[in-house]
Length: 281
Image (tube, rainbow, N blue to C red; front, side, top):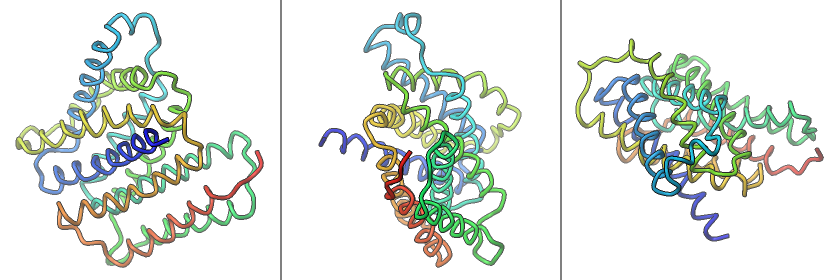
C-alpha cells in the first residue's frame, strides 16, 4: 500500500512538472511549441526503449505487442495540444482546464459504457461544467479561448489514454510502445518548427519533460492505474492543478487571480462530488 501511494504521488508530481516545464520554456520564448513536443515525445520514446532493452532485451518488442495505435494517437494529440495551449495559458489555469477535461471525459466514457449516474453525480457534473464555463467566459481575466480549447482537447485525449491504460498488463512496455508509435506523427509538426526561436534552456526543459516527467512519469502512472479504483484515480489527479499553480507561482511568477481560484473551487468540488458518489453500474 505504501509503495502504491508513493508511486501514485510520483506520477502526480510528474504531471505537475510537465505543466511547469512547458510553461517555463514557452512563457520565456525559449523554444517553439512544435519543437517542445517533438523533443518531449522523442526523448521519452528513447528513454523508455533503453529501459525496456535493459530489462528484457530488444527481443521483447518482437515477442509481445507494445502499446496500441489508439493510445499513441491520444498521447500525440495530448502532447501537441498541451504545448500549443501553454503559449497562451498560465501554469495553473492550463493545469486546471487540462485535468477538468480529463476527469469529465473519463466520467463521460464510463457513462457511455453503461455506468448509471445517480442524482449526486449529475449534480457534480453540472457544478463542474458551470465552473468551467465561468473560467472561460469573456472578461478581463478570462484565459485565451484558443488556449482553453486546445487544452480541453489535450485533456480529452489524456482521458482516453488513461482509460486505455487501465487495461495494461506491462506498464513499461506499453508506455514505450505508445511513445514509439507517436514518432511518425511528429512529422506533422515539422512545418511548425521555428529554429530561430531556440535557446538551450528551452531544449533542456523539453528533454526534462520527455525523459523524466513524461517517459518515466507515465510508465509509473500506467503501473499504478490497474491497481487504483476509478474514483481514486480520478480524485488523485485533482491535486495536480494546485501543485502546478504553486510551481507557476514560485518558478514563473504567475499569481492566480480571483477567477481562477473561484473556478478551481467550483470545478474540483463538482468533480469530487461525482467521484465520491457510490453509484450502481
